Image (cartoon, rainbow, N blue to C red; front, side, top):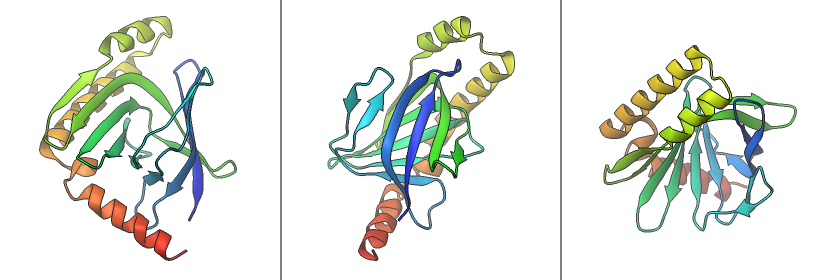
Length: 173
């Protein structure tokens, strides 16, 4: 299995957050696996980790990415409005720009769009261009629509399908 890294930045080029041990899920394009207790490093050097597995869905076409939080009692979602993901083969690193706004949701269809005040603050301070602001608005609307329709990474079967693909790949090592 291919181990990769992921790095997020802010619009002005500052490092935001990095994931140092992710794995591509074989046969599932744009699906990454993070084992429980894998360190995530913030720009200030502080580390944290999830006590449960996280499946990360990314796309080179979409202005968002989705972390599927595989809690034992339920599935939750942490979605970043972000630039389309890019991949550098030489460093085996996925990168994106985090554009502040997040959608937090759960498998019961309850969600909240958060950090819009952070977007306003950063858009002014970092001078987000109008075309980027439009992409952020469009991506937020698209993400909400997908979540409400339970489509794409929010399909009820997605977590199970991706987990089975991961377990099968691990079994074949």
